[in-house]
Every structure is written in C-alpha cells, then in structure tokens.
Image (cartoon, rainbow, N blue to C red; front, side, top):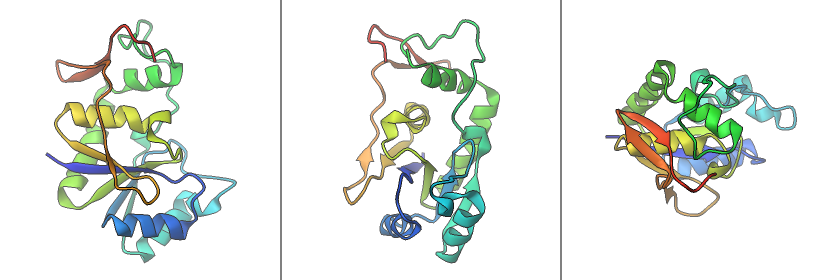
Length: 176
C-alpha cells in the first residue's frame, strides 16, 4: 500500500510551494486540476509550474483524468449522501474505469517516490481532493493532507462513504 500527500496551491508563491514540498521530501507532484492554469497566479500555469518544479528536482505530472468539475453522468446517482452537485458528479465519475486507471497510475508513482496530488483549493474538504482521498483510504492507502506549517493531517474516510464491490459509494442519513 502507498502513502500519498495532498496539497492545494491556493495563493502561495511558487517559492512557498516548493519549500513546503521539500520540507515533506516530496519528489513527485501530480496536478489533478481539470484546467492547470491561473490568470491571477501565472506561476501555477502548467508550463511555468512544471519548469519551476523540475528546476527544484521535483517531477511534475498533469493527470487531467483526475480533474474536478465533472458534468452529471448518471441519471440516477447512487451517491445520495452528497447534496453538493459537484461532489456527487465527481463521486459518480469515480465509479468509472477511467478514474480507476488514472488513480492507479498515481498509486504507482507513490510506491516509487514520495508523491503529492495537488489542486487549487487550499482546504482539501472543499474540493475533489476529499473524494480522491476517500477512494484511496477506502482501498487501504494512507493519505496525508499538507497545509501550511502544520504536520500533515491523516485523511479520515467520510462516515457516509461505503466500499461496495470495490467502488466508493456515499450513502447515509447525513446529507453533505
């Protein structure tokens, strides 16, 4: 089983991001933004970010297949505990072979070197990193969330998440 880290770039400078990654001995960053660009923070545009990370000795990989902002794909979603349409759409996408293949590749990287997956949102529970983390933890991997100078926080599977036939389904009476 692998240990993976998560981080949100938020409004950090590139120097702050690199220092944080180096502090946690990260060797590979997997970008899971659907659109790896930022008008406000051009240092987080894909090409700029890749160049800066490479110069710092950190491997960069964009995994578009893990990007958020998914459209509704199931007429009758089994993820009834997720009221937030964006989260529910992403959870539905997690049921697909495309998601499983892409997350499998990230796991392979994490088994070879310390790996972080990143999106823009600083707080993991406000973005799809929470759902990816649930999938990983439900399948026996360890996920640690990096935020500022605090020690990484271990991911706890949402109470509504159920592993059913290898798929993470969000059920329960508490709606999110």
